Length: 104
Length: 306
Length: 168
Image 1 (cartoon, each protein chain N blue to C red):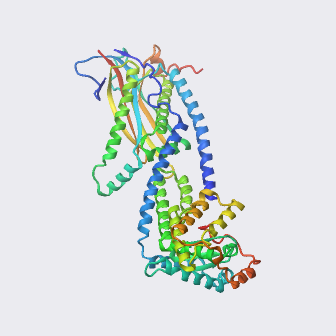
Image 2 (image 1 turned 135 degrees about the vertical axis):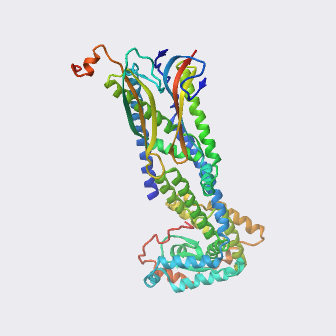
Image 3 (image 1 turned 90 degrees about the vertical axis):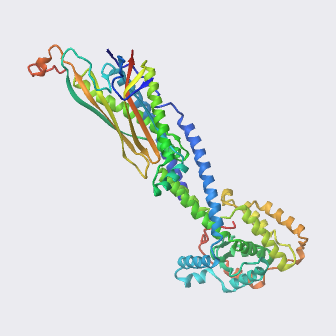
């Protein structure tokens, strides 16, 4: 499965445009991590727990998008866009969507 | 080039789940987490609270007691009886030397003119004994056992440790639930936190029982009467089931009676019933005079002894 | 006593949230599937490049939005999940519903305008009211894109207002 945020793939032709596919995932870290992050906020710097949380969620969202693309017989997703929104305290939603296509 | 929108399979972004099963698992997990964290915090707070100087605790208690009854005079009359208070204080003062109280610690006994059969120790070495208890208690030895028990609580700083634990636990619960936005549940658990703040753990009760027995044997030369208060509570409990079992942190009275009997035997002391000393006549008299008075109940809300 | 009262209120809210929330969600999903099926002919693409149409199509911006809220039961579960950590399934289905509903509303608008496809579809999500404390109350999903209206055989007449489309 080819994932790209270009609209074309150099050297390859899009045979079929299959429309919108999307994946989303909402995740929360346990309270211990939340408290540690709260403490870390005092000193600044990277919040490792949250970096990890968002990355995990993003990967899962991408997996779900790929699953949708596979489900409709695509072999690539182009013009992919990621977006993040904080849904609740300590939980984040990661959303990714793109165009499912069949490349030759 | 071909354009189409084949239908996408359902359930990829909203995987099916069982909400109720989910709830049970989460409740279990969250409760286990909270209980563990609160237990550890409580232990730490109790440990730290014990290191607060007694003088600070005493001042705090004086403050609280004064704040509760700003106009001392009318309550003084309805709630205390100088003769009874003096008698109780005297008995406590005779017990104190056997308990090895730390330097600067004082014990103040108050008599509370209420129906409930109760005695409890609170902050600042203040011990409350109710009329109900004095009426039901069979002899002075048993009363000395009760007082010794409460003095031991004071000695081991149980009230302040328990208060510290309660405050920290309610703070902790408020923090945890505030951060998850479940404020209504927070209020609920907070109430529960205050409810249990001045209860003592079973090991604390055992400690107090054991020290009280030492004092009793020291004062009267016999362990007789040591188990009488527990037999009394046992009887009262079977008579009226108002206090739900889960609210009571006391070890079951039977278990405590057995533990005391074991300690009496091991210590080589006797439990000679003939050496029991009755309550002084003037105490009985004072109680008889007071019994018909209609005093509002429910003045002591932290029930230490049911 | 007060604690008991609070507990009862919480339990009632939970039961209400569970019952009505589930009912509403099932009904919403049924309606979503039905309308998705009805609007399947109207194509949807996130890409910006248009295919080479034989005639020059008219383009118009279409959009759909929806604000949707989670029930008490799911919010409670999400709160617990926040303690333990992991995937917050209560919000996942909420977002899924919101996105599909917003897209459907956009498609309905495009259908009213006589479009045959929507290109350059974009989705925006925002949590608009954060309820009590920091709990999420509701989310807004906004879907927008460019609808492609192909000229019909008698399109020039329609476009230049000579012949009004018949209302039926």
